[in-house]
Length: 402
Ligand SMILES: [Zn+2]
Image 1 (cartoon, protein in one colour):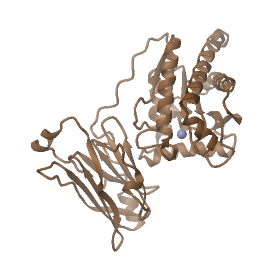
Image 2: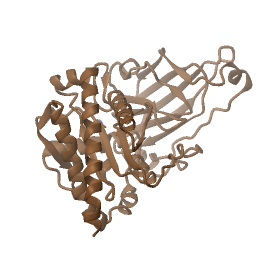
Image 3: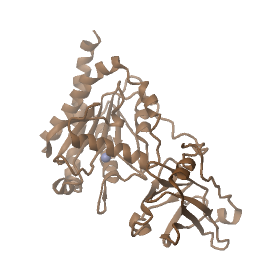
Image 4: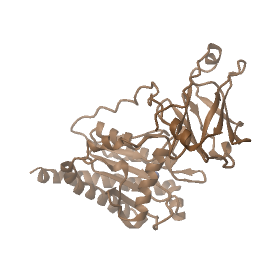
């Protein structure tokens, strides 16, 4: 039963506070914020903000989480460790941009807990606000009954920016920098996959635009969260000719080192690839995206006919990228071509690939990924691969259509 909102609260703006700073986002004061476990199964979250903002609170199950949406909080410079130095009844926290105009904080609950007190008092003189949420342990069945996403999933916010209008005859590539916002992807010290891939994606866009004759659309060009289905939907909205998702994940098993290109298959080529696909679905779920029911949306594009035509074209796209990255020196994975059921690759009618430029879990790859010169070489190789495929694919089209 995932239907009932635990609480939806809106902080009503008052003039003196709004007058302080109309444009700036609320910022978190980590020193005055904390998460602490108390007696009798209680836990309290205190989040100190530079100003009051509208917010809402709800719980999600499987796994149990407490979600706080804000309009809008800037979490820049706040580390999860600073907010939760030691896991307790709250086992992990994540936060960041979620959708345009929203930020999200997700607390992973080590025990089934629901809020029994929620407040955001605002200091009238300073304008500073303190979000306080008190949680108490509840039986599993009560939690399951009361957890669920809010009815107004879009929270009254207009849909994201309209996709760009594109001339029908243009060759359109959708570049998809993996992760973003509340979902950092892999993290090693100060290096995060979401940041690295945004940089690579922006550079790849520029490289392709310099080449000319290519319309490039990014699924995100800022540090924001985009759901996997949202990325697929954008590719369709803009009529993409190719979809390239960029990643640098951490993967413990299966000799995960060196550039690897993945394509969609229900049957994973190996256990490590299956784990990687599951990892990405899980990141969506942990961010608070409900994946149940999204298969219907995907099903509409899973046309066998389209798939039969697309599959060989996807193969040649993967090969072109691998050839060009290898020619640029890689380093490539031992088996650079792999398959798994990645949700982001489920467009049957758009050749879609997922590129692990390298793996943050591998020391050599990590050093490469942190090296701007190496990244620039890989960006040029990816651009060359896409352009080579465009030309080859175009030459093949009359043959396929016959
Ligand atoms: Zn990734």
